[in-house]
Image (tube, rainbow, N blue to C red; front, side, top):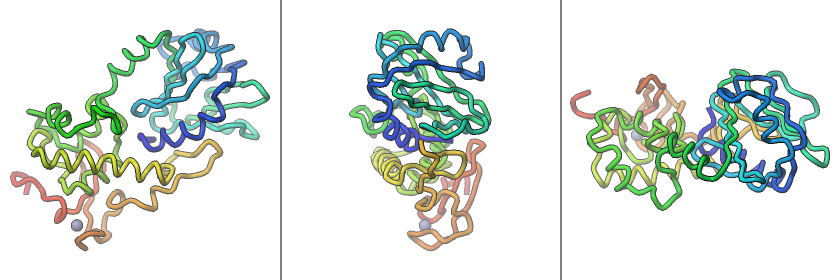
Length: 278
Ligand SMILES: [Zn+2]
């Protein structure tokens, strides 16, 4: 599933192609994409709109359009965007016809991705605020804020990091990478981390996300760039998907465990298991 670095990679590739372009025509081939709005409503709302900026909030791609309109796209499990593909690939769900003969195609085999059109900056902020917690790389993303949000929570810290309403943009890959970098076991109850651990973890989250952005995302599944190319972060994982290999720090064998239903990779020497679970 695309996480913050994958969505940011797409945003950086998309922005120069879309800025200043007009959406001449839009064809939504799958009504699930716009639910609960109808495809016709979104098609007519976007027709003729000029793209002013392409931004990102958590895992959402946010198109700012003329007339104070916003298209909020979420790629979910398997969504991807292709710019000027020679042919429509299988599982094409949406076609954007842009001016100057350009085309953008949204492809999504599993069909969980969504596209919502909202009117006005306030509606946009409400939509995102209801779904997203604190955003990495902003002034609000502090150890103090994270510790306060986690206060009293007994759920594992990894589950806390995956909850988009707590921390925006972190998914399974970057949670594992950040917890390893910070030396925090994924099963530690979120509310029990010390202030120092939260400071280490806050820094580690941003370091892991930055490494992912620099590698143009990870392509372990359907994630592809605008031109169909793959990201390379999967070749640079420190801990994720390395079960059975030696920890790069201490040499102990990396284990795979399940936390909150997700495959989780951990070095139990570098990341001490909480005592009650030993
Ligand atoms: Zn280790």
